[in-house]
Length: 260
Image (cartoon, rainbow, N blue to C red; front, side, top):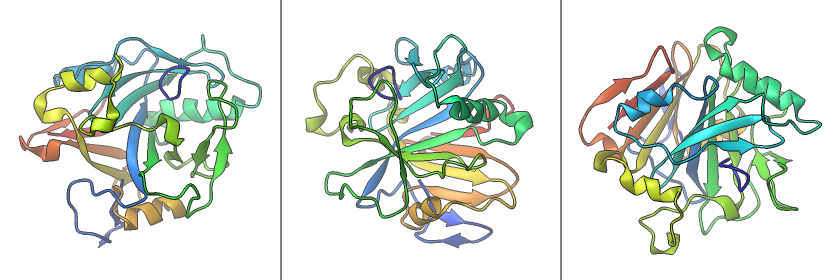
C-alpha cells in the first residue's frame, strides 16, 4: 500500500497444530508480502524501529480514497508499514466504513481492535484462483481491473486484515536476480543492518476467545505464519533467523516484539 502505486502461521490455540515451529516456511502458493501496523498520526512510533538501526524509506505515502498515510521499512523479501488515519487524505465515497475500521485499529489500546494487517503474494507457480473465500477491493490508485483479494470478511471488525496483493505489486526478493532494477524505495532494504535484512518469521498472538477466520486457520496449518492465543494482540517479527539472539519489546508504545 505504498503511495499511489499500491500499498504467517503455525496454528496454536493452547496447543500447537501443524508444522514444528521454525523460521518462516513459505508454502508453495503464498508468501508474506508485507505487514502493517496502524499507529498514531505521523508515526511517532517509528523511533522504536529506528533505535534498532532500521532506516525508513524516503517520503510519506498517501493513500488517496482510503484516508490513510504511511511510511515503510523495507527488507529484502518484505516490508513493514506503519499506517495511520490522515484527515488530510481524501476518502472515496463508499470507503467510510473502512476508515472507521482503521480508526478502531489505531485506538487499539482502548478499543480492543487489532492493529495488524498481513498481506500475502502468490508464488510464481501458484494458481490465480484462491483456495478460500475472498472479496475484491479496488482502490483509486490501482489500475482498472486490478484489485486486492480480501480474505478477512467485510463485516469482521475484530480480526487482523488479511489479503492477497496482485502479482503486479508483489514484493520481489532482492536476492532473486529477477528483482532488478531496484527503485529508491526498495533500495533502502540494502541499507538495513546486516542482521535485519530479511523477515524470516511472523507470529501473531491473539486474545483469549478470539476465533481465527477460515483463511487464517488454513494458512496457519500450511505454515505460512504462526498463530498463538495468549493475553492480547501481539505481533512478533523475527529477522535473519534471530541470529543475534536478541529481543526488543516495543510495548507499551506498540504491541510488538522484534527478534534479531
